[in-house]
Image (cartoon, rainbow over all chains, first blue to last red):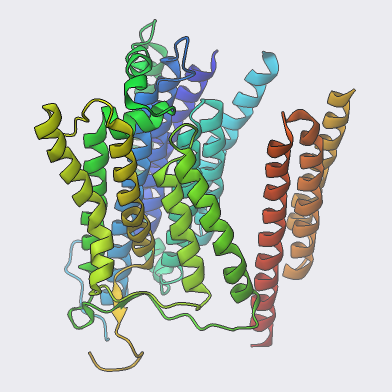
Length: 108
Length: 319
Length: 93
């Protein structure tokens, strides 16, 4: 089995692991971590596809790799915004619950 | 080579084990430690896949900055973990989630095994047209010449994310300083470290920035290094976070996208399409865009780590 | 001959990393664990760098490897000091 297929299969497993964590874990911060695992699995899949596009002059197709750099930076920005939201939720309501009832204001 | 195959298999298994651990372990702090190790191992995977620029970015942003941000968040959880654990859903949701994840993973695996051969690729076009951009690194050529629109939109997305983080500030603190004020212990080891490392970091960042034209590197990795040095200085208490109402700060944040858009419009008039570069002017314009984007990226990455404004100048003063 | 030297040095470095990890898992408290980690990582990485030095092409690349080792040494020393100090402070409370 060549390297691209092996890493592609590994990436599929990572997406599955991340998805399971995203659904099952109760705390929002853990959900963000699981979401990042899932995202990096998708990036790895894309990277394996980039490696398959190697030709005589280049060891890997550079267009997907450039898109991956953009994706990693944007994923960090999204995680930063999500984490800021979670921290604000905890400060405002003293709990990190995502339950349907509107949260009560915590004593400031 | 057989040994290469064994190494790859070992790396993939370790990667899956770390990911499973980061998802399944009980405590959040352990999960983050596992996640940082996972990020660093992933950058090794990128080296095996011949994506050196991606490996640099993953190690710096995926492993380093994301890990730092998560650790900063976990210290402010205030015991919400125990409450969340008591809210755990029943076995039926676990089973459904397990089946769903297995289904998604299996579908992706089947797609991987059924990929077309030979693989469709844009590499020949990149090789043909790279000489016209006068840069040697094909990734830089793609990021700043062939797909410059993606990079421009990415910079704008970063600005919007920063505005989103700032908007979470309580109303009375708008315009104030993000994050806590760290005490500085002038004889402490952290202050020593924060005086010793940033000059080295700045030199390395400058090298990575300039070498990005022809070798792996570029402005993203260099901006991450500079933001990390800034965060180190802030954490040692040697400097305070700037007020977000500061004009110079705001100018630094928007100058990257503004210069990029200006060059794009210039290209519209001089070469016929948005973000097109006229003959022979490709390299200077790329350099101008990169130099303008460097402060933007550094400030945005550092400020995303710092968070929304939480105070004004003197701690404990009113509004 | 040179390859043999590299292999021996790198295996030695890997052994020290293994010893450091075993120490992390088996030692009783924070201070001894820090001791195991920093000694193992510094010496282990040094052996790996020494093993890789004959394999690189040119003095500049070898110098970069040594600078990497020095930076890891520096950060390991600073961070272990900070952790030990925090552990001490927590003990006193």
